[in-house]
Length: 270
Image (cartoon, rainbow, N blue to C red; front, top):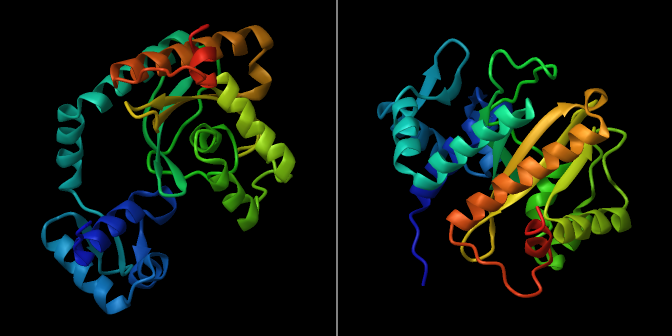
């Protein structure tokens, strides 16, 4: 039997919501609506978090944001979490090798979220520098980030998202059900995903999944570039580098490819 404390769960959900770029400064009404909770309950939770400096309340705007104590707490967590520390070091290596900003993406429920990023060295001018907002959430069904998570879910989960509607973010977002399923199967076969302008117009993303010991996708590595600056040769180099990094981290996590694991077989060819 699973045990839970509703108030603790709600507090965690509130912190996750405020960590998202879109909701980084939100009113009580917005928070209560997004969490599907009563304003009175949310107010008690937020005031408790405010007393502990986990959230900050601006009395002029009447909005809540993440509090100052989360900065040292987050830094300390990163230091103590070996898996995250290794992944953070790996994206720095990828950024240096590719010349592209590279990020780690984590899935929170049905939202992939940027949790860390690394830029290429300051003197690397191969590509125009892009920026990534930590905490920014990305639609799960639009682009390479989400496909790297969804591709390794049960196919019934694919149909759930199709039934809910594939929302177009840009004109190139895949909204046809058959194309969507084929794109997910391709990621499962290849072990990586590429998207061109499906989430941000004019931007190409090359992503690869990082597997945990049980075979579940824990994180995704993503390198992002302006599409017009990435020719076929450079794209091939980025794919090779990103896949190799994801494979190293998966192996460090204790992931062992099983016979018939299509993605693992493809990745082994890197």
